[in-house]
Length: 95
Image (cartoon, rainbow, N blue to C red; front, side, top):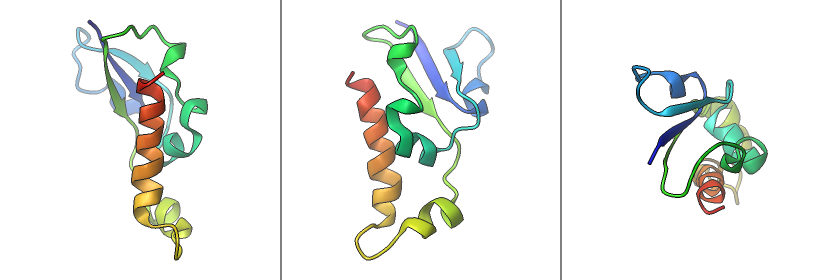
């Protein structure tokens, strides 16, 4: 079993070179990953095998721009943060 990290520059941090296989995807926010889903990160494009562990490590969500501007009477912060981000994760781990 291998451990893979996917994400921004923080996906490279904290490992001494003998840890996970890192997949640096550039400056990617949680918000971008949630909105773009498999277009932003599709683990099928990497050497991930069944049973491998995956760590998603994307940048923070900018609440001023990425959350506040999209909230209205029918869209809550949960829709913007939780539903999209976790939907993107589910798409990746269930493929």
